[in-house]
Length: 77
Image (cartoon, rainbow, N blue to C red; front, side):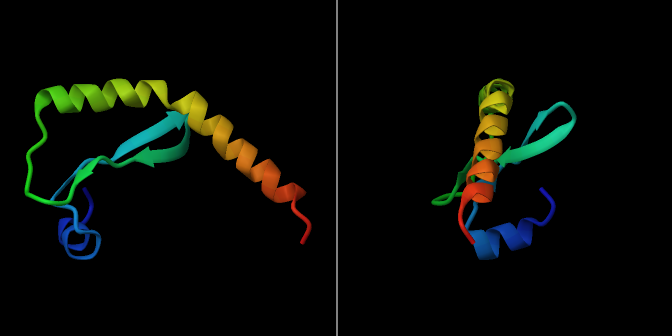
């Protein structure tokens, strides 16, 4: 995490992870699981779950981002 104080004060996160969604060397998004109601420490099983989930997301996120960009280009200005 880059700035724990900022995350805590302005986002309300009490425990947060940042996972990069990367495909073909391009960052398509981030996955940010977090806890708001109490301080927390992520377990090894939770880390493994997030890592496994991150491996499933890149194709879907890339397709979604590309579709949104195409839809925005087709919108009349």
